[in-house]
Image (cartoon, rainbow, N blue to C red; front, side):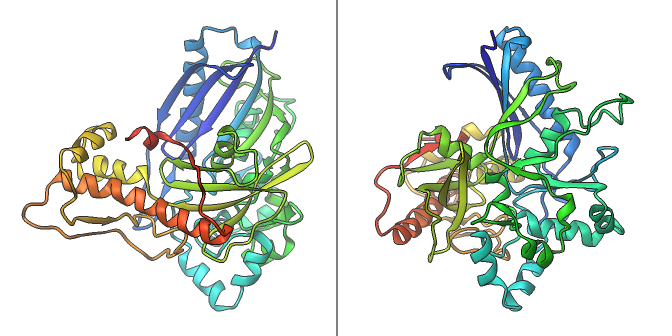
Length: 427
């Protein structure tokens, strides 16, 4: 009996694996954090091997903790941090550069140039997105601009470009077989699902195909991009992965926020969820209708299942739980992120301390990549507790901005919001 499902959630700060029963019960889970790299101000990178090792180890730990026969796993599903971008050699599997993370701001100047050249309206019309460093297309432009000969190699089909889901799929399905000297291994699949593709600035939102115009505008060769597939369906099969049997189908892929919308049961048009993770992301299901925002939100594909495409309207702020992580790692005022609730509750108010957590610029509804964090209202009486409280208030106030923008776009504010993400544990 193929009784179990292995779910992989590859996030911004760590990777989680869950073993689930066929009726949806979680039998075990394991999480492994990995390093964040900040080589220059505004730059955020991940080491691809560290991502991969965190996934493999979390899978091994979760399967072991569940105490099941791995041969009884019937399917693997992947959800992933979106927009984070990789470029790798199809023959060796080696990446040309660290993964450029969705929070990275290095392409702000390119986005400004494209806006000044009058491309902003066309980009939004084609992709549903805005010209911002957040999205994958400008990151690929940077990689091709900084690695001599990379674009020509991509045009010849020697390089693969993709988001984290494509990279994981390629590795899970035996992508390093050549490096390990395993002859006769078929080429691994280079695929992505439509929800992830809709976040690249390269997909035509109406057709669900790669846009020749956007590829030309951003200088991205079509030949290096993955095949766009529905969110549910067989993407490939496991091969030499984390001690699991070969041949387990990878049967579903969706970007993390789209997966959360689905996982929260937001199947009805108008249903809303907010994920409080590294950032905070508010999505509303708009059904078969592609939404249009006039207040700084994005149009995106929520998922495509059984031939039916469901759309969503989205607003995201880039720093939510990451602000608490910064209090812990950057300032050292917490030894654990879990301490922030008690610290913030130890004072009645922030006493005028205000924190604007623009540590990676500002996302929706402002879209200001050059914004930087600010703490104001400090006095001699200000303490770590006041800053902790101001940080939690900042998360809430950013989400309030998103809710208000969504209400203006929809004609009424959401009446009910389902929430998830690690920071949602904080009362």
